Length: 436
Image 1 (tube, rainbow, N blue to C red):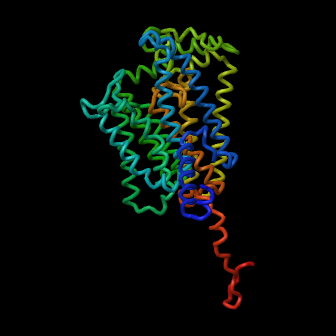
Image 2 (tube, rainbow, N blue to C red):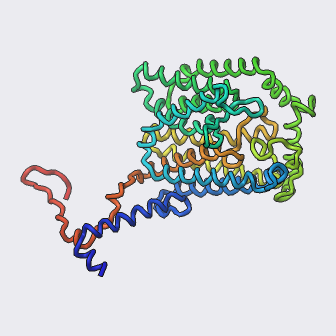
Image 3 (spheres, rainbow, N blue to C red):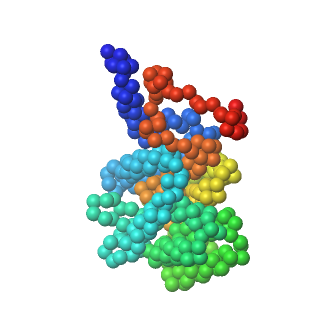
């Protein structure tokens, strides 16, 4: 009966098919159920699975690194893992929306999103609003909303907006250039005042590298590099704990119980892993020897449990992600899209290498998390949003940038196909030169 009614009423059939299309769209909010991924270009599908693999390994590492301290502090060994899963779910929903949204639209709202998050960063500097942890006011809690770290959330939007600005640099008016340079400077200064030297340095290097990749002459960028270095020196000169970190990095055994303690425990964890590691869950340093072992120094626990082999495999994953990302940048048809891809690779892979360098003693101790490994909702969402932007660039570079609206996804009925007009033939008498 229903089939007969649909055949007699094409409008009803169109409505039914529209509802089916909307159901598919809702289902596709969950990445693992996204049926459209099978039609993506190879680079997009590969980046998608590399992201999922990165997430899975990070969740396994977090489970091991956080279980003991969560059980001691909260009586629940899964305390941090459960909350990380909630943030991961929120990040994956954002991930699915972005990989299925036109990059033109995303870039169109990037300036407002960046300014919004910049406002949240400025709110952390207001007495009574920011949440202070270990002497730094980097977090914000507004009413019932959970604690957020705006300096982490702004990273993907900084990539988008800097790609817009530097990608159209030669076509921008001088006042527009100065306006956005002033906003970028305000962002870096506000992060420095939290204080958060490591994140400010990362954002500054990200902006500088994207400007260099856009073709801005190195002679013009030299002054900004010197200004950034001067700002870092002033910050270190005004804050004693930052100077102590640098000195402990040079010789941690000079003060093994205070400033050098963290790095020494990290080196002991990495060195104890050997070639094949102590085994999953068998880290000794995570048992209240290594501080913040489930955030900034989670790689130390990973290296102790999985050894040199595990560390090399993780680096291989990062290299593969970077290689595919740079390939996407080379295949991009537009300069702005190329800058987005370069920015995402610099952000995710560069921050990962900086975190690993700190854990192995190659760099001074900083507060940068390991993307998709370290505990933290803001870092998790920012990492997944960044990965989604890279995948979206890959899709659009292959000509799959058309995201049809709901009305265009309906399946035409047989009646509609039968009543459709045939395509018009070229009129040669009117001088139509189109090919037949």
